[in-house]
Length: 148
Image 1 (cartoon, one colour):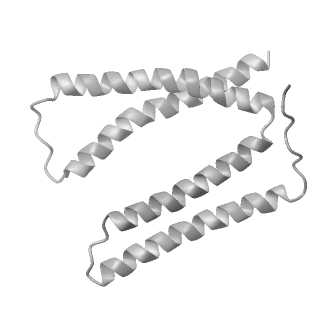
Image 2 (cartoon, one colour):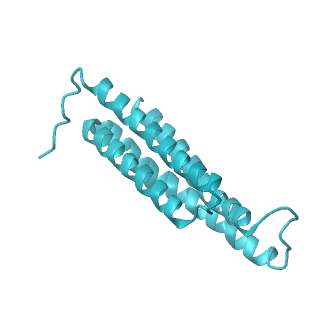
C-alpha cells in the first residue's frame, strides 16, 4: 500500500516562508551570540559551534521532513536514485583523491598562511564536492530517462 502525499493546500507557501524566516533568525541569533562573545573578549568555542549545529540541523531536519512528506513518488524516487548512484560514484572519486593525496602528498608541507583547519576544510570539500556533483548529474539523468 502506497502512502498518498498530503494535500498542498494554500498554507504551503506560508509554511515554507515561516521555515525560511526561522532559518534566517537562527543564523542571526547564532551570529549575534558569536559577535557578543567576541566583543566581550571571550573566545567563542564549542558552545557556539554546538548552538549553531543544533539550530541549523534542527531547522534542516524540520524542513526536509516537511518537504519529503509532500513530495510525490516520482520526486522521491529521483532523489533516492540520485543519492545512491550519484553520491556513491562521487564518494569513490573523492576517496580516490584522498588516497592519491595520502600516497603522493604525505611529505608535502602545509602552505604558508594555511592553518590545519584550512587544510581539513579543503579535504572535506574534495570529498563532498564529487558526491554533490555526482548527485546532480544522476538526478538530471534520471529525469531525462523518465521523460522518454
